[in-house]
Amino acid sequence: MEKYREILLVLSSLGVLESVFFGLYLLTIQGERKLANRLLSILIFALALRIGKSVLLYFSDDLPDHIRNFGLGAKLAIGPALYLYVRSFIEQQGFRWRSVYLLHFVPFFIYALIAAYVSNHTAFAPYRFILLQFFIYLVLSFGRWHQALQSSSLHPHELRWVRNLALGIFLVWLSYTLHYIRVLPYYITGALMYSIVVYGLIYVALKRNSLFVAIPAPEKYKNSKIAQDKSQDLLEQILAFFDSEQPFLDPGLTLDKVAKKLHLAPRTVSQVINEQRQQNFSDFINTYRIGQAQVLLRDAQYHQHTIASIAYESGFNSLSAFNTAFKKNTQTTPSVFRKLAKNG
Image 1 (cartoon, one colour):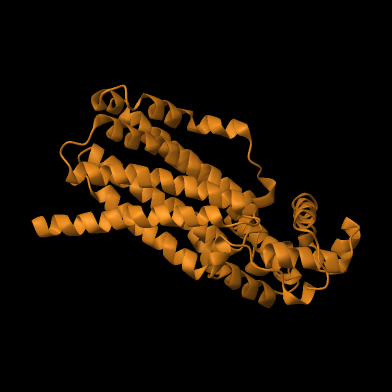
Image 2: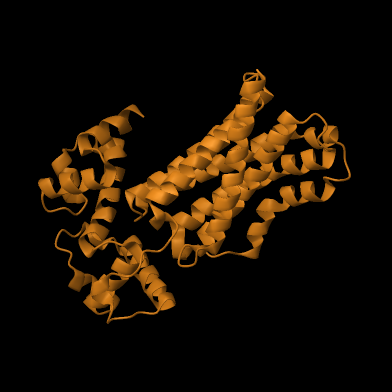
């Protein structure tokens, strides 16, 4: 039995230590996702504090109350950090940090301040409300992700990242909740689940570092520089135009037409999309068209419409182009997507 305890200690402790190093790494990354990375690092540090306390408590019988209380309070920072990160990642340049967001962390600050002055019994009394607060922020995070499925121009792998991160955090919450209501007998389960989540995060970071690090501008634009802040402003202008006017519904939409509407040079529009979205113009507008098609495929009023009619209503001028783009963006076919939407 002692051998298994040692294995559990190593696995759970490694998860905590690796998350600390990963959080520090995120703080060093500059670029357009700097704010999102910082919010993710706050999320990871809050989780590391909470899980670190769990590891110490499981393997130590005399953990001081102030450490227990501070680790318990850290759970109050996890939900807000996740929600703000999801918003920042999805909304990108449309999300700006505001001091009012600190209000989300007020419960954590209160626990941090009283940690050394109250008993663990007193600090633990509202634990069910701590779990409820955590769950509410999980719901808000999944809700923002679901909204992005309907209208966001993010790449599918970026949306999957947000979903998988929220699912991983949900599993951590579920582990602690099931232990609290005495369904799971082992307190260390939450720490082990977190270690698995951290290993997944690091794997994704190594495989798709574009989720954290801005990809350098394509070589073809090396002699056509646009300042980073100017490029971001232009992207916001383009996104606002696509969201409000929905030009992608025009099957004959071209780069020149978009540039003319925005009073910009076609090369400028193309460069901004390439640099800021890592997409060419065709993939960029198809992302919007697929998003519109997904809305129609979910809509009960369109259940009797053919796949072809939905393709045309979404801005495609051929069924084959629609099927190819849909599979590229969603890794499934329109028919399967519709069937899953009906069953869901």
